[in-house]
Image (cartoon, rainbow, N blue to C red; front, side, top):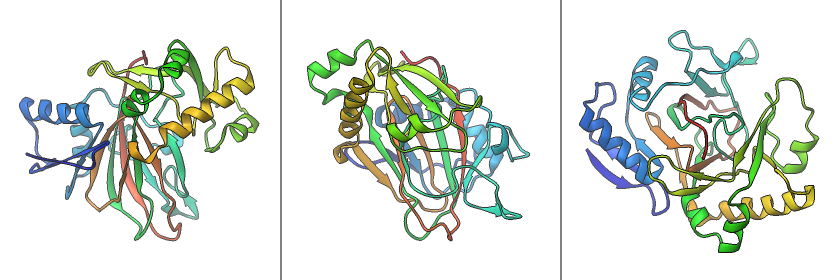
Length: 278
């Protein structure tokens, strides 16, 4: 296997491997170590079906089941399609179109997903890119005063099914239904393997800081959002059909750029269960 950096901030590409084939323990350990070191791993020119993607994901841990209406695959309940594809005039997958702000998957539950695997089947000619941001770098570059201030704080992350409110104000004004999910997570995540600290808030889902007034919370969160979205922390992945990307939700944020909704964008996703953020 050959390793190339995707950029100096986050991500590496592994070539010389066919993911249709079973892996031995040395190969699994090698891939995991690259993943721990770089946060995002890309495998290009892969031709894998649902079951092959599932088997590869299971090397990393127990897979999380897809929620309710998005569980459309007959092969395995962990499979979700991120697509604007329609049947009978209705979207058949999740997150069909538009831009999506930086976030980390499942941060609104007690045990968020630790890894996400996304495989490209159809991509638009322009846009629909996935942008990653290194939260180790974001944390390390905070001034000591901010680090000290957020050291023991928790922030509430929330998700209302069917909505993706992009700002603090719009999230607070979003109708809360009984399906709304929310959980207070530490604002700093210590990675269980690398032991490095990462900034664990995000513009899409982090709503407020526990114990602070509304104004204090909003001011501090906006400062952190603007800081973590600095381009020097980022890598923007322009998809090709056959790309499989894995990213570490404990230390990497991801976002999506806009694209022409008349063009088909279809990717297959699975996630691996994680543990409590500490």
